[in-house]
Image (cartoon, rainbow, N blue to C red; front, side):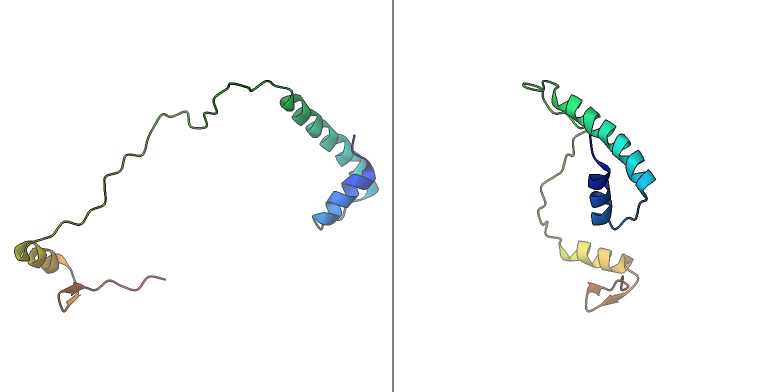
Length: 95
């Protein structure tokens, strides 16, 4: 079981000010939590697979490769842009 002094020490590290009554209360509560964690440590997990994601979804991505456009495709794309300068598309500044 945690002592009041240990609880006050941890509270001090967290820059928390607690009273003696609060330290007594928290020592009991934190001791219960640590006891539960000790129970979890006793569970045999040998040979168990860790499976965090239960959805089964997988990210499927394609290879990122450049595709050359002919002049007609390039001009068609530039005509769709609102602002162009020297065959480059201008975009607004984003901060």
